[in-house]
Length: 336
Image (cartoon, rainbow, N blue to C red; front, side):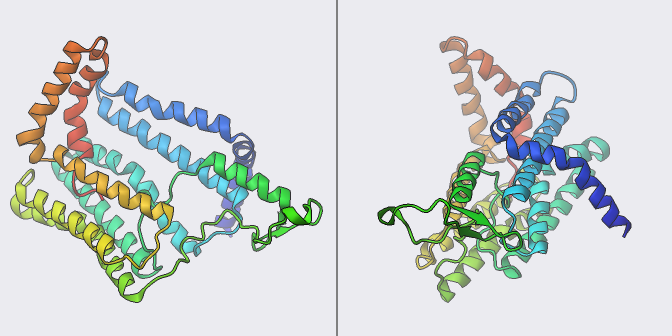
């Protein structure tokens, strides 16, 4: 009872802001883009800049995510997945936006022991929730982040078009065609008006290929824990954890690409596979490969650009100064 009153009070407080968000998506996007740039200007310019930069980065992503949820609440009445599944995706998205901040904070407060404890707890939490999505809710591919940023322009345009041609039922969220704006017979289409729900999840599937896809995704989800376990035996910045993580990534992508040819993937799933293939290039920035091979070449390239290209030093010098922090914070292999 008390919790319900609290929730209703919070909703009343944010209702004017929610209406403003829905009515001004373009202005909102411009403000969000400005806030997104702040972490890059603060990096390396004052004491504790790593913490404040990460705090601004996490806060900006959470603001965008919160605004997306408000826009969905106003324009996407009917949710595609069960309530608990949506909560899992929300928690995973929040953790992905803030995990680096948690790590930096733990290291600042408790040293390396606190940092590794926080890393382990966060990865166990993420792994359990992702496995629930795969094996309990039959999610095929876990995107990163699980709830992608909204395409504001597309959402607004599609919403306006659909409401011009029809109206939305309050309970189900189904859009029904209206006879008020009926077109001439030669211009009519008999396709149903779809809501803003992605129907790509209901694609044709093969049971054998589906099992292979679940295996590939499970390997990918468990990779951070395998990597952390290997580090506990061999130590940090050693070749065995690097090779193990790289091998799991290759195996997962190989299974997903060669044994699931009978499965049709949605555009979002294809984008996620492309992101994972592209992420293989980041292994050159992960220790020990970075320490032994990449570091010298990257710094040499930045120095050459700074000396030969006019005004390039204003870009290359901050990168050279902050690259060690980025390499230690963002290019770790336990993050999927």
